Length: 313
Ligand SMILES: Nc1nc2c(ncn2[C@@H]2O[C@H](COP(=O)(O)OP(=O)(O)O)[C@@H](O)[C@H]2O)c(=O)[nH]1
Ligand SMILES: [Mg+2]
Image 1 (cartoon, rainbow, N blue to C red):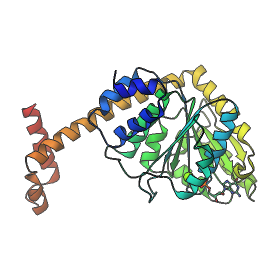
Image 2 (cartoon, rainbow, N blue to C red; image 1 turned 90 degrees about the vertical axis):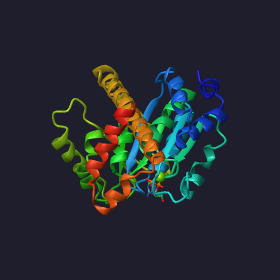
Image 3 (tube, rainbow, N blue to C red; image 1 turned 90 degrees about the horizontal axis):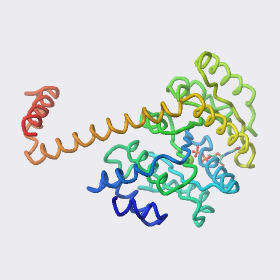
Image 4 (cartoon, rainbow, N blue to C red; image 1 turned 135 degrees about the vertical axis):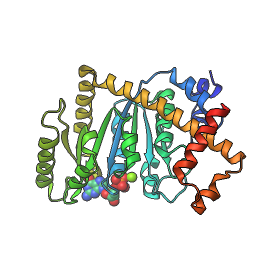
């Protein structure tokens, strides 16, 4: 067992922080560490929160932390904000908001910026979640901004994915277009204190009728006013319903299998690429100028590199 894994198992928070930096910086012992971690198994409940910037995800996360702590649950948070200008840190507002939880040993908050995303932000995030799980947090909240492919990718590891929408924002069409509908397990209408709630609710219902009419699980819609601490119990109850569905239908098990398969493919993909590119760099990347000058097309160059790798290994 990797020494950091052992220390994480003993709930040493410093070891957890060190392990996360291993993941972010692609430390050479990273795979060894993750291997050890995997033997701990998946225990935590992973909740994804996604939605447009400003929808109130961080406010909700902040209130949810307090709500879950009151239930006696420990909480790990990974906030993914690639647009954050503060390298590796949260946007200032989030920091201030979350600061009330900083001294609580039952809460761990980590922000993933653009920094240290050598292996891709999605991958780094998933690995960080695995570390938080190994440490023993009961619930892991994953906040992602927006609707890009890497967000969709990240959300696949969540047991329950909540999409946060606001009245009057016209977000529903966006959600529909971006393929978020397919991964949504729960809709949270936040800022329900603002006008336009009935319209938004009926828009979501229509969309659900269209996309989920023959699906085995119809996502619930809950209203929240995170500023006033309203609706959190409903959110947690509906998450519970979805979790129960995952257990009883076997869908949870199917998702876990799919994620394990995906993890293997990703590691192979990334490790191969890393090793091949390392070798190419040592060889001086001779093909680069040819590709630049148009003597060789990129496909031919790639094929040559792969053949050479195959020969050498
Ligand atoms: N009126 C209203 N404003 C809210 C509510 N929840 C959050 N906000 C405000 O919406 C803004 C964006 O919130 P934030 O949590 O940072 O959104 P995020 O970008 O999705 O993380 C902040 O100014 C919040 O104070 C709510 O329930 N009602
Ligand atoms: Mg936020």
